[in-house]
Length: 248
Image (cartoon, rainbow, N blue to C red):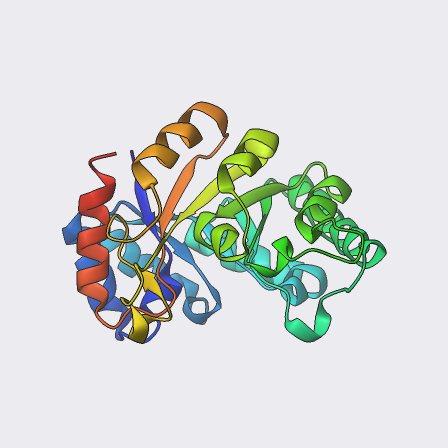
């Protein structure tokens, strides 16, 4: 399996050439982009190539996707990105009811149509807020997916868990929508206090060995992307995570 690495995890560990060299040596073959690496995509692509890394997926803000799609295309093409992913919605932009979340899903559907016409895949990436119940007891993620039936899902399993939901039930319901997975772990009680409660993959509380088997069987995931939102040692996180993942 080709294991990928979300470069957002390494945003505090510059320079990028050192990060990419480390990832290549550890056995990663792919990385996932985010806004912090798009300033000079041509130069960044050269560093990827030098270290035997590909960037098939990349995160782009909803603002860029809706208002500067040509710019997104130029960046994606320079870096080799084929799956565009919308990763977040700022707190002050989040709807508070069913109609609002359905409307947001419809916005994603329009972006997805544009992406498809241009030859790209498109997916939404979750955090925890999509699993917080609305007044009627439903959750935003259901409304996002139902209002954007042709949009894929990059499932961040750890955020589903932190949102209070069961990832297995979501894989069962929407597995064929899952085009990519964020492989992230949650720290055991009393650990990871200086890392926002996250853990190296395989060293936390999530049963990744079992989940990977379920995802392989029931999802359409093509990309498995390591991520830790706030590691204090990037080499340790990258090394221990891929070592654990290779046993799954």
